[in-house]
Image 1 (cartoon, rainbow, N blue to C red):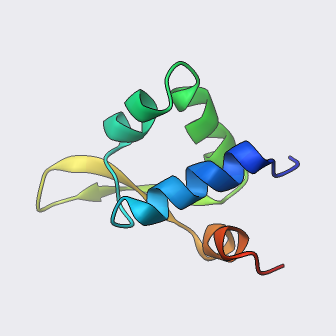
Image 2: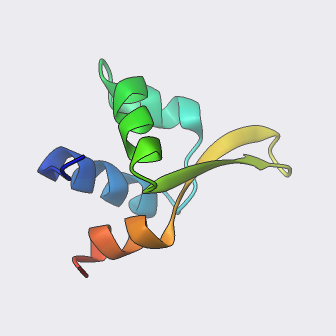
Length: 74
């Protein structure tokens, strides 16, 4: 998958949302393509979804590769 400006902006959203926004927040803030965009980022290994035990919901975190992309590091 080619990384587009849309993907980079979505990665920046994750980082700027405290580094672990809830999955539902991401999807809603990127309507109508939120779920599809999230799935693209997952398939490209740019994000992971983990369970936040403190708040009891799934959150999105950047992978090392996702961090490098959002920081502009090849």
